[in-house]
Length: 255
Image (tube, rainbow, N blue to C red; front, top):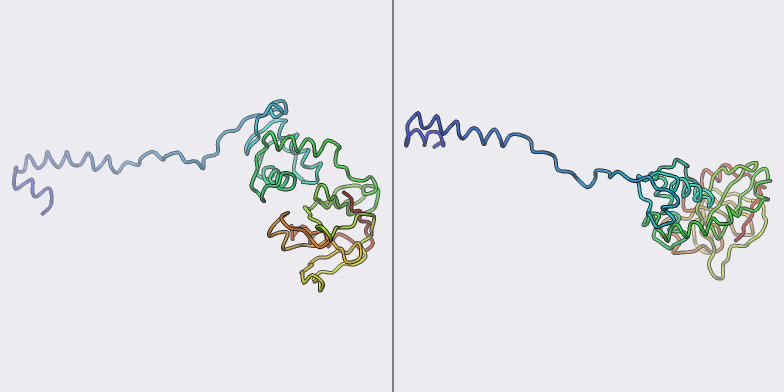
């Protein structure tokens, strides 16, 4: 039996009408949409941060703006971590800060995207002497300039930086050789018979040592090392570089 019919049986038509009217009010109220709760996904407004504030310990996070952000972006570029200088701590800047923290502070890939006091101190010390790129790299028609300390491979054409890719090098007993070289051989799909290791997109510069893409570097980062080659983790970047570099291109490996 329905609720309204039960009322008619016990209290009559007039009472039933009154009850029916009363019951309609909460039903109508329940159908009104409740205000949407605020969620944590709503981006918070960030601050304008000066370099003085950064020096005093203020952190930089996603969304921040100001000359502190510009300073960080310029210093990342100095280290070959190519970052558009916008003055806005955007997603690209945050990703590149994480690259810096992985290289220079031992974090796992993508783990720390914040510029805190320790990151800022390390970034300043790492860039205190500029990019430290040997002048010969900027005077050649084309040059691969490979820095072990900065863990970067830069490619220059007529003194202009074209691209820069993160790199890792040989470990104890298999050190990557320093010196001035020429790219003398390029192999698209190479394989090391000695170490049973794929070496795709190889560019040989000294004996069996080459710049090439490494699936292992891509998988474990700086936790491993090569057998003397210059490993690149960015496959698309290495393919693009391989296509640009010609046989005979100058290559310099240095600390």
